[in-house]
Image (cartoon, rainbow, N blue to C red):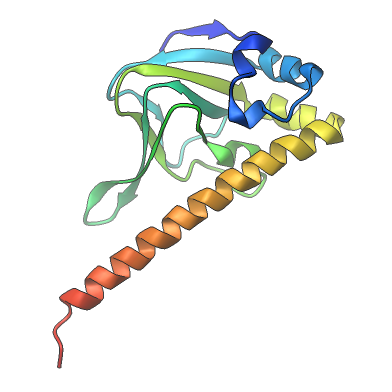
Length: 163
């Protein structure tokens, strides 16, 4: 993956930054870089360290889990302008919960999670807006997971022998 620096104007069109002031966008730009990726590239690995929060600028990224006796299972595909890697900005998740793999070539915004957390602690207004977006990201992932679980249990029930 190759990387380049980020300007505030690059961030203004992204929904995750829509509520930020110009000053806050400048802070985020200062701790971010863009990275290009190719189809099949692993962006991070399940159980690995959690250094960056990502936003897809172009392309698609699959989020996958290793399921015993089944192998890799795609649980979500992240599209352009969507964020992923939320565990990097929480204190509870000490490791990555999924593997992120490029579905096709594209470009990512990578935000240094340690510096983002530090900036949020120093500026509660920035912290409130960022954490609001992260909370919505986590909530949407929980909803998707719930629907997948319901689908999975419905399939196993319909496949079970009726007595």
